[in-house]
Length: 377
Image (cartoon, rainbow, N blue to C red; front, side):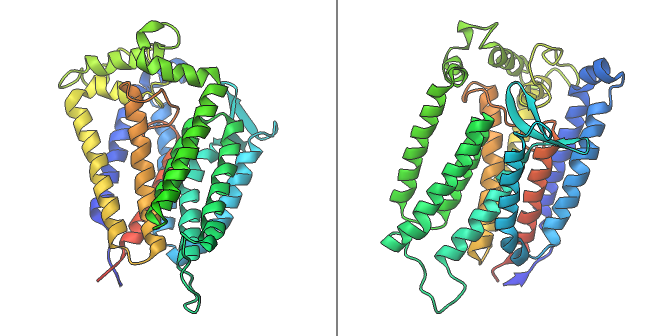
């Protein structure tokens, strides 16, 4: 193994995404910012101060802190995050919107613990699987994940982990975040080298759980049906997806131009967060969307390349998990805006308004850059 310098390709991609996101936020948020605060600059300045600046600082911390220390801290980070997820239900600390308890408010600063469990669960699972499958004590045999010992030491505990996370998000009424965390966790589990039948069984059980969650809450089931038939209730349940499709379709080849969106003026709900891509498509058109998606695809290639070059299982799993999480979340967000996925509440990575998700994503990028420095000769 040798220590390499900074991966400038990843830095360039993420820098372009951050610049694109902040520039676009400055235009998309101007009307809402003027109506609420009397200035057009409030939201993008807030994003810069409370999202980008702390995110870049923690990205630097994740980059320079030894990966061995990060690995040891995995269980503590995960435990702290789970405690924070539980604290959102306390009236003194938790903040609820639209009947969902997902935010903590401490010292006047609100944040979403659910955004950070995406990165901390990756660190924890990568560390846990590395220790179970490849013990550091060379006198001990490598665990056989297909045998009886593998079932009790790896498969069953992993299922329990998913159940605990699922239970927390069930009470938070956040099925989409659970879907992303669950999919990322399964991807890491698969990449660790366990038997394929275990992965298939976990996927099957996960599908059953999500089917029950959908049936249990009528609004979740309506999102599925609305995805296939948005015009059945265009002014009700299908309003957001209908308006999003109008925005995407009206963008054409080159878009209407930055700041020229008509859908952001109250027609499209959550235009700065969940529906950012729809407004972006309206203003930049097919060309702008192609550039954005190309940046995400380049990040996907770079992240997987880093994972492939890493010579430690922990490094490999973290790099793969971070890359899968960010790109999969981007896929879910974009797909929901073009009718290929039910309307979700997840932000578009690096682009949507919100400090918590941006900070978590930059921590992940810091880890990815740290891993890139440690590669095979």
